[in-house]
Image (cartoon, rainbow, N blue to C red):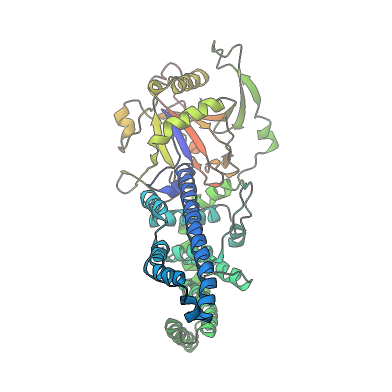
Length: 518
């Protein structure tokens, strides 16, 4: 299912999605945390440089103050001053030696440490692609969670710990990135926000003329000619000689005149705008819209009768010896398909071990290209993943055993290595994925749900828990209702680890039936 995934996954196995160093910084917080430490190191280096420069300037200042007094005295009576042989000698010495030393001090580069540190660290800096990716991610969050530009710009997001603001210049940059992608809808939104903040008196290096130039064109591209003319007139009031704006205005007036001559009806114009809007929003219909609603928590609300069928219980893994005396807490998340959540099922210590094992291997997650059938990265899926095997760590092995005990399924045929081929299941020789076990290894302040668009279910992250469901009916047929997608994280970060269990080895643990209803 081609949906966005801003999350970190570990398959136990283990497939773990997170983000790290230079390739695709924007895809996750994990690798961006390294940049925080890099920037801190540079700030320390810069402060050392400033101290050295301040020390140098202090020496120069003292020299200037001393010479200021001396030259004031000397210029009032030059002959009398130089009549003193010591003064004559010191003048020669100052001009021949000391001024040269001062020149060397002034020209001395105090930034050796800082510049060398910058040179070393620069190779790990984000590039234009990373900046563009981060901007696109912000625009995607805006669409998914129905956020207006002012809300985002003011940093008024739910659950934020460190409130941050977008300056008019930041808004302008977002608008420019949208413009380069021919995304005139978001260009208009963010250029208008930049203009609004400047109109409210924000002091900024952003120029209203440049903003209006981008904005008027973006508006025109979306079919609103009258608004485009109004914005262009405002631009010309600020810069009457603006060549492009004058040309655009003549063109707009020509188009308007042609429309009047042809007596083009407003209905035709509205129909055309509706068609353009449909083309612009085709990606959002219909499944995308359903997905975004679920991400916002606007999913299907169960009837009281259905809710009564959902229970909490202590579960012993069908009398598994390991859990008879110490059953685990289990609760129903959904009825059809049946999705259950296990509470307090993985400890903080185990989570940290899995994360530390996975971090060095994280790489950009892939999806299948429907045209080529090959795995490729996609702009809408910005997670990173790594695979861990049970033999690598007692912790991973213990987690695998726990999954087997509680599901009753054999994990020996589950995926342990990430496959890059489209026919990965065939190569594994273990059949289709019969079930999915998903650990939530972090809490998420806002966003990040796992949603099932076919049935309208949303499952929200909760650290230390796991959810489980079958992907196949007992007959072996695929259960379409279990198609799922991860919602982007709005605030915070998300670590998820999952185990995909396969058909082979389950013949006696979950026998096939003739009907999917049995």
